[in-house]
Image 1: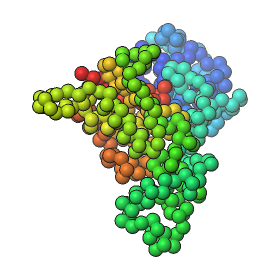
Image 2 (image 1 turned 90 degrees about the vertical axis):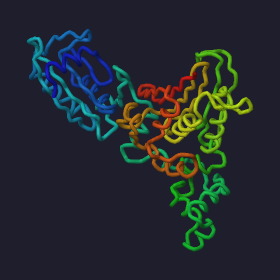
Image 3 (image 1 turned 180 degrees about the vertical axis):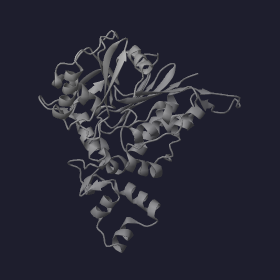
Image 4 (image 1 turned 45 degrees about the vertical axis):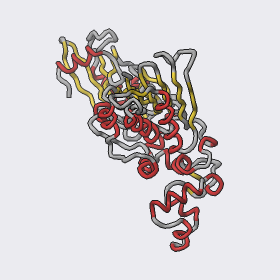
Length: 386
């Protein structure tokens, strides 16, 4: 519940992704659009009786407004959205705060016309097809990594030597021995390993054991560029590469690209030493692995690695999952977007899955910034160069 002081402070901050001002509300369908956008995002407050310039004008007919709120939330939102209202007198004028919680039955849409809306900064916009698909899957408790990938085939698209080596290392028994001893065929085995669904590979099977992952997911790559200046709009570059293959190959090649494009410093070592990288190898390794295993694979775009004269940027698709914030991950907070992928990563990559990667980055290279861009749907790690 708000007090007069907290509401005044909220109004003074202005509109943002969590706060919307309305001078008045006279249509339930218009109010429903705001409710749907908040419910499909992270919730927020609609403050009625406040103008865009932050001036308090007040509500004239509270009875009519309450009826509109009831109609909008129950009849114009699908599924219905359960809102909470609070009335406050400020400067001798009545304002009404409509709290719209983050929805638990996403995605929500308006009834007529049908619109799936989401917050975009202080405004709202139509959800893209990709965003809508991801939200439907998340609401159903289905992870993107578990979905079968059309046109793939277990027998044709699996790198069998890689899978056999992984299995024997993990289970101290060959796949041939295991299938024989347990009277199970190969397709059932890979289904039980959660790398396939029936005879089709899922994302884990493709990205860890696929022969040619980019044949089916061409944008699941790392694009790396070394610029001579400090601006991505530079028309020249020093070097650039696209790294394809399974995640372990992408990891090694990306790490090698970064290290080969950064100068080494002597740091008190002998003249004949090769020196140490300008940015800690530990920090680079952690940042690259995090980008590969924590990215949102529902977004069809590549990971970008950009080396500038003054910084290294590693940009992965998808903002931090759920209620994670930069402050929380700096304290070791974690929430897995791709839980099955992390299981494979902990065995195939130098990844431990303890939620300590960000802490190691900061310890190894303190001059690191993290940007959780929810509107742009990306997470950026910026390591500043000496």
